[in-house]
Length: 317
Image (cartoon, rainbow, N blue to C red; front, side):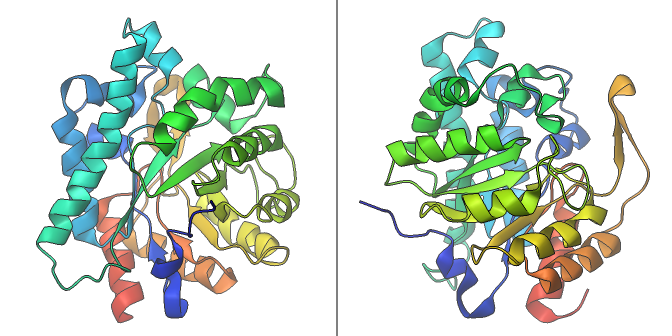
């Protein structure tokens, strides 16, 4: 039985839904050492309370949707650290439970929030490239074909589908083959909804060079896809990408780009500057282009989400 769209109530009456911001870079700002292929999933092992604190901060800032710390959490990735299959499954479920508990604690202190407006929890399903930890989620040059990607993702996909999350966030997808693999896995789970969010290299193309509009038109037709969009992408490309998608699909458009800073891989540092004002002004432009679900990715903060919430809900910032 096809499940009802869990995001639709958040978009009622022309409302814009707000996704949270960066998790990993917020953990780093709080002192966590993420210099590891597991990235933010590493914190699940020893300091899960740090993840809870970040979720708490984003809900307090006004986020309608929290994304879990499972982007880099895979059975294969945990196995490289000597963590067995059962323990890896427990850690992935824990990541979802932490977000749910943060959401429920927020609701307990905000009785005025209706069930329809209840914040949602999205279980992050990161791309194959995130496991490789070699930057290929920004290239899409996988050695695996679509069938192999279906097989590689299947067990984690089903585990997260059963985790209690409201929706799956299939994110930072660099190529059409991986998006189609996720669609095939959705076909195995008609009780589950997901959004599909691509990484993009410019205002027209996703990371491997395919046209975003073509994929938005294709992916948006699937009845279990509740939003299609881009994330972990430079903000200057977003408006053009949104306009191209809006022209070919009625499916809600989700965007949560990076802060505008630039990552230097060899030096593992960020350059440039970003401010709340720039992020919020950009979000207003993305909404004008047709986006209805807005948030942030790398280097965005609870302050950015709070400023966005203030602008969207009160018209000031």
